[in-house]
Length: 192
Picture 1 (cartoon, rainbow, N blue to C red):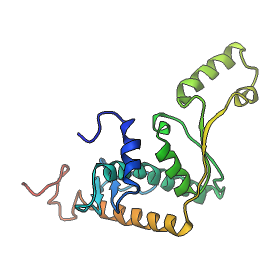
Picture 2 (tube, rainbow, N blue to C red; picture 1 turned 45 degrees about the vertical axis):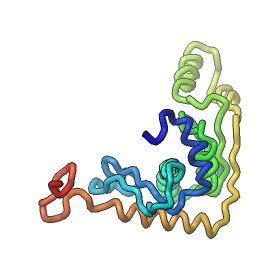
Picture 3 (tube, rainbow, N blue to C red; picture 1 turned 90 degrees about the vertical axis):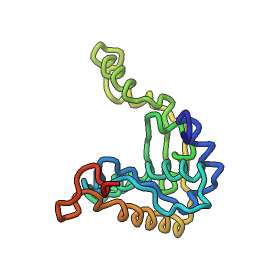
């Protein structure tokens, strides 16, 4: 087992310093938005004898940020509206290293709220709005508070290099299912 609890991933990944040239593509059931490739499968790319557990954790955390960037880039392209900040929520926001990398790879500030589980908070706000605790959405918006902010400081050339390498890794993950001749089946493999 690599880790026994998700909270261990940050220290392990931070200890590695970088991803050691290794990328993880979590395409367990294909690639979803915006790539839509059902023939892709998960893979580690660039692994060498140098890589250790920290690099594996780092590559996995960075993969989440790269996938988020792919969706954000698609949204920006489709809407014509630039992203100048990102508000995040959920369990993964507890990982400061991931949030910092997300900020760096998006080249924009990332903000985590005081209450990171906003799905439950949203339900509470909706109920409160319905029974008159709050009079309107503006009153609810005023409740939002920043817990932590991460600002980008990654060199633009390094960001471009990482993004290029991520896309190269993703290209290695496609074509694993349905090789075109009907010989491959879901689950893949060559009978070994």
